[in-house]
Image (cartoon, rainbow, N blue to C red; front, side, top):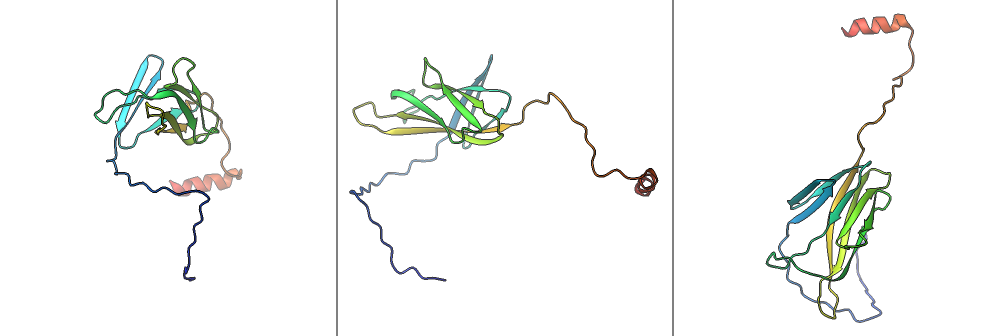
Length: 164
């Protein structure tokens, strides 16, 4: 085992260290619309399951510290942590809405809505996250294939008789 004797950190600019009060862990809420259906889920950890052959509209809503509706400065930006699983397309008329569309791979990705929460001249980036798991869609076809190698009928009959 090598003992660490010296650590050196070099910054090209001034490093500002600010103490920030730790906020209590909040609750996540996600509202999804599919045709005439609207689903709202809330909890400490919410993961939405999306079939690979469907897409879903998602909307972010902002609240102040007292739980009242709040506004943000400017447009909301949307992104996906893995565009090979889920792509996001922002609504052209309302940037708080996007469409999440599976791209082909199944798996998990995180959708992020980013905005400027500072209503003044400054910028305070606020990130809102939603976990999505893309799963296989509804079955539309089937396949039948052999399992194992073919065996002579006599061996197969004896083997079957031994199991029963």
